[in-house]
View (cartoon, one colour):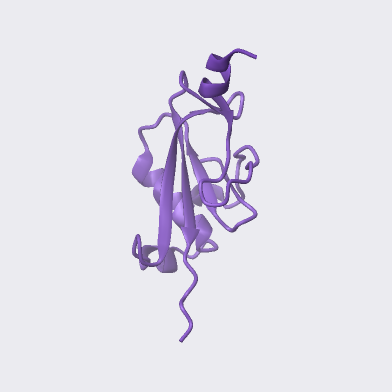
Length: 117
């Protein structure tokens, strides 16, 4: 297999745990979930921005998904304190791979566990 192919066309892995994730799919929730998304086995939620132009909306949806659909909780969380977020760019929704020729983005959110004293 050519080296160029390996560098430009890679499977999609969760940036938090490294596990290959399922393809984003339509989510139940009606109008509240406008973008396709899913969940990793490590607890991270992810949502697809097919145009790479709706970052704020997609990030908010992933945050609400990670919060179990609770908008009040999601809007009360602070980045870097209550959750971590990572954006994977160059996602190809047709092949479900990362590719240098693609332009979609996947936004990942993983809630931090409260510290016990």
